[in-house]
Amino acid sequence: QVQLVESGGGLVQAGGSLRLSCAASGRTFSSLPMRWFRQAPGKEREVVGTIMWEPYYGDFVKGRFTISRDNAKNTVYLQMNSLKPEDTAVYYCAARFGGSWSERDVYWGQGTQVTVSS
Image 1 (cartoon, rainbow, N blue to C red):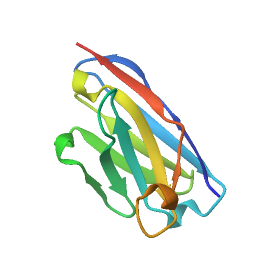
Image 2: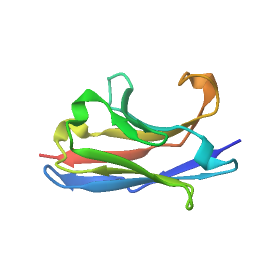
Image 3: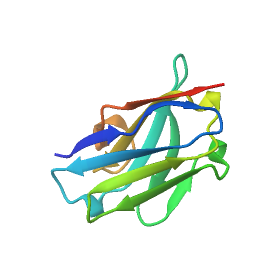
């Protein structure tokens, strides 16, 4: 079992930055692929990015976000720059322990709200 706790969300003006953190406990963190998702009201959940050794991102990121991990701290980060109002969503981190990113193969955090004002 893995417990994930996100932090760092909040209210920021357009063009600003936030850094989200996801602290993991309970299993060998370094062996788990990690992913950031987001979900805005009325919209489907979308993948922000994924990291195991090297990060890769959803198309909408366009160089604005950076995912990193610190295995010594059991933490994955999402640095978000040049934020836009359309980035407003609940951001979730997830750890994959199974063979896919489906619900049954993933541990989820509780989410953290990011609100970007125009």
